[in-house]
Length: 236
Image (cartoon, rainbow, N blue to C red; front, side, top):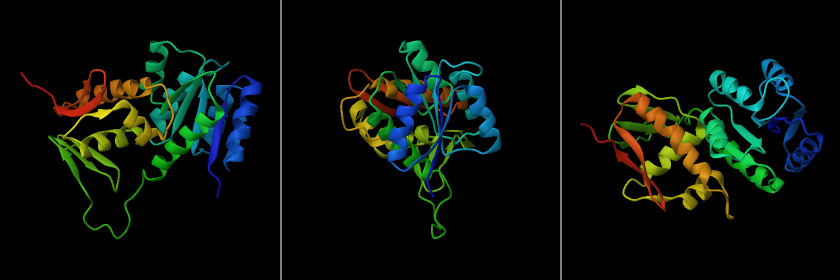
């Protein structure tokens, strides 16, 4: 069965272009020219992924993203926008989008990112029946269970999006070294060409807020000019 994508953008040409490329890859695409119509459709039947423009009449993309993330923690969300300031990018990712693409972009890049996000979402479910002893990854007070996609910090559950969970898993599995931004882009987003590495920085900012709020003593440390590593948060 084809995976269903809801696309909201008030530019008809962009809607048609994106829908055409996604349809060629076998996705079922339903388009909307405003955020209000998209939210009404979600209230009737949820899609497998949502693509949102930021500037739309009615409910804008950021408001829609915030509401959808609050009510549907596992729903993959991609924001596309002509707004390229650091504030806009951080805002979009902080509100819960899994990716943020700046217009103009290559349609094949959007398709590649959609495929990567949906691959992670497919694995964001229950473990196989045969998995009697779930695999556990640990770093300090952080415990990750990749099979059932659960995360505990200090023994308490922490809510993570599929992208955030995979990001932390990747760092914990490589806790003996730093991981470059380029390596993360290829591993998590499936991007093999030169891309905007700020998406990784924006994700880290959002993740740090969650880790700090949970108070578990684990941090994602920036290795300046290179990438990131998982680290124990220093306590006074």
